[in-house]
Image 1 (tube, rainbow, N blue to C red):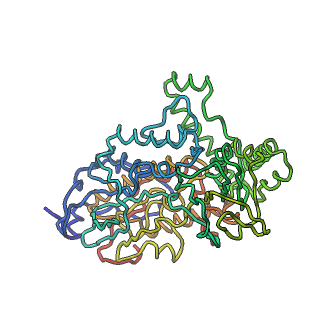
Image 2: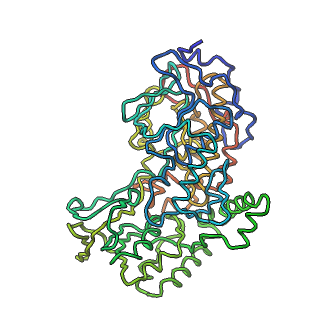
Image 3: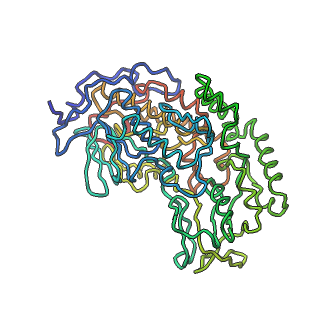
Length: 539
């Protein structure tokens, strides 16, 4: 029989008495992720159109991980809506010269389909995108994908327990559960400079690379972050000149060789389990060495020494070296890996400018010291609007609560980076405070996907939409604030980890292992059924 009310939706058992308790002590999950067929594909006769069990928005690492997790627990009634023409997320959009991953590929890969190349340690953008396409085909995800479908809004109807999503084309889709997997690094940030509109050459963001641009002339690169350190060495090979406009120097560690040596290749190719051992070892090593840097811990001092020695070795010019020396603690901004950036800056055709940009002219850039430098091409390697989470999407939950209004009133926050009170059956992959600068983000996304699948099973078992309890959110917020206070970020230099007002919004302050442990708890400890009243108040 078709369900028409929230009461009919709640046709199953009542929740256990432990619902909504403090989730942080952390008993292990039982069999909540074992999916029953009760709700799968069941229609709701409360309007027009079919109701899909789960709609995932985004087909990058997060969305594809969630899709594979659903299949693994027996849910096949789901769609993956992707705004672009292909899967891949940032690895589809970023095609600039030199684009590559700076996390070892055997760790930066799907847990359900690990990267197993025995030769390449740090694959390039094309290799990663091809790997993701292969995963889609081999794991039966293609049939669930809907490309060219940007989502502009989502509204929850408490009377039916259904989400209605709207696309840019005016299409509406209805779903019991929505998972936002749009990521944090997909909306380019463009700095505002007077006169930018008068520039007569080519100007584009690194994430919107113009492959028709002539890169043999005079090129200006604004920014010196993760993208710039990969772009500049490539441009310096062919350009008549490259001018790098730097605001804050980065801490840069030497990058290991892109390819494995002969011994490692043999081990990975012949020893059973070597891939898994290597993957686990890299992750544990990152937790043990990189994560403490973010807290100013034991490894910060040796990491600082290595970075400074790397700079001294590759930049003998004392004036340039001084300009490239950070005056802040390592870890306040994302630590970069490169063994080619500094040598590129030493080329006679490359200049580093630290004076602020005053304006852009028709044929170049003027800095505050009055110098005008010619430019035929301007590359904005200026990052993304990472703190503007889910920007451009209108999301209204229970009682018409607007997600962005809620976040603006305080800060972007979500329980374990995946659930917000007042938004039943709505989840996020890579939401607030769930980006790790010290490990592999696909690993955290896999943990979130498993937890979300357990939440879907819990809603099925209780027969009602569920949402994270405010008591659980408060306990998590207190824990999170205490952890963030121990990091170098709150008092550090500006970075994309936080908003302009200094509020940290993006970064996860603990280890990947801690995140795995916390997402392995029973969601019944933190979630509760949606209230009977269509209210936006606390639950």
